[in-house]
Amino acid sequence: PHLPPLQNSMHALWFPLFTLSSVSMVLLNKFCAHEFRSPYALLGFQNTMTILLNAAGVSLGVFSVKKFDAGQFRMFVLPTFLFVGMLVTSLYGLPYVSVATTVVFRAVSTCLVACGDYMFFGKRFSRDELVAMALVVVGAQIYSANDLSYHTTGYLWMFANTGCFVASQLYEKWAVVTVDQSAVGISCIQNLLSLPIIVAFGGYMAEAPLEKLEATTGWTKLAILATGVAGCSLSVCYMSLSKFASATAISLGGNLNKLLSIVIGAVVFHNPLSSLQVCGLAISMVATLAFAQKGQLPPWLGGGSPRWVVGGLLACCAVLPLFEPDVRVRASSRVSSIVHRIRAGRGVVVPGGGNITAYDLLRAGELTEKIARYNRKAAELTAKSDAATEELKRILSAPGTVNAAGAAPAGAGR
Image 1 (cartoon, rainbow, N blue to C red):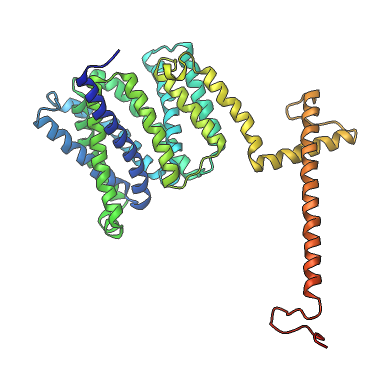
Image 2: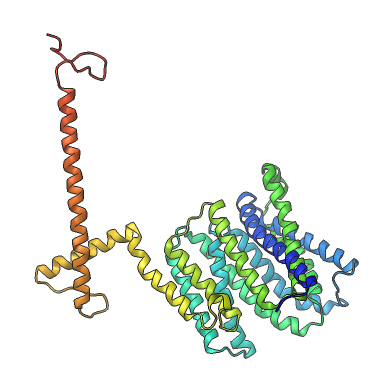
């Protein structure tokens, strides 16, 4: 159905701003985490900006909060520690990993939160939702196993970030339904409680943010300021979109933002993605999208269960390695070894047991023929190179030829 003109204009205003704020926040955080190694100072600035924005929104009547009391602050002490831990581990890990890696870890975090929902809150999931969660994990495994930008330190920080995120989400789910406070009020409580924690840990780590800030370039200072603006803008976008847009539309917008962040981040930060990484990432994103839609894909992806779309992506994962040069070399040596053992009349050792099938032998024969063709071409090129070298030697040794020093060879001109 067609949307009313007012709602159309709201979509045209807030969704582009949502995308701009989300993508900017991801890219700016990665840039600042790399250039300004004071994560606690950066978080303190961002959280202060959020508090000021919330206060301005409440005073202008844009946001509403309920009456605060000491019990609400006590309730959110533990989730605030988790909240700070989640943000700090993210800033520590971002310099080592690509934007795509953070997206994959967040997708896995969603599955872990769902498991916590089942264990602690008794939530039940349909078969399609369970399939979607399993496919998220499969895609993440394919991605991480082929990550060209893999860094052990970065992955350890992202695992810590995942643990903080999952624990924070589960605790907040319980606290939000227990505490009588609005979303903006909860945001104010968490950000206010986070400031003394950030100051204490920043002092303990001896960050010296002012000295580091003076040593940075003007672009870094501008990026730090922009993170505060982008964070505030993103908070406003979420609150505004929740008033007129459906949860499905917001979820789709969030996935689009992730995709744009991955593409732009790969170009800006020079984090290339292999073909298998792209397939694993696509599987996780499609499965996450399906999980958010009760295990069903949106109509523009064909609707229904994601298993067919993901099945095609898994097939690509099986085929794409054949086009990777290093994989071709390993496969060629493995096939040559198999064929050699077969021709020598010895058995073939197959990992996990089993026998070589007729199809395996046929495929081995085809690959062996290709290897032989490549070897013949290499031999032809080598022969041509040798012939050209001999011709060059003959020309240089001919009487009257000037050598590299500019003098005629001995005996020339006699």
